[in-house]
Length: 136
Image 1 (cartoon, rainbow, N blue to C red):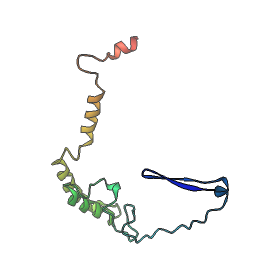
Image 2: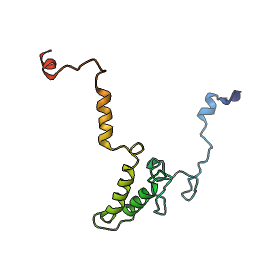
Image 3: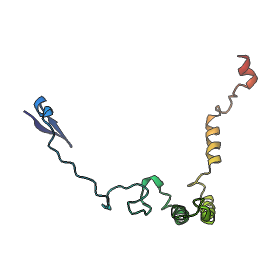
Image 4: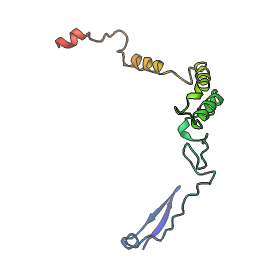
């Protein structure tokens, strides 16, 4: 015989072997693609851009959000043979904005510099030269 027990905030359900052997009677409800509260991907079913998609990492709402939305929209809706070819000015404007906020939008070479700094030995210790490593 199965039973439930409340343990603090948790509800513990004990079931018997017979409970597990019986086929489930649960009915699955299909997701409503028009549900505004349902998490959608980057592109909504109607083809619009989902600016709330976590995949954008907040880019659409940061200090350069307007420039990002303009450039991304231009690219998404582009009909050119080379997709986005007409969007260079929007992307240039976005890049200029991002350069004004380097703490929020670090450039890749800056990140690479940080990684190199972290891989250096602590001050006072020198890493062995290539010659020393070869002769070891």
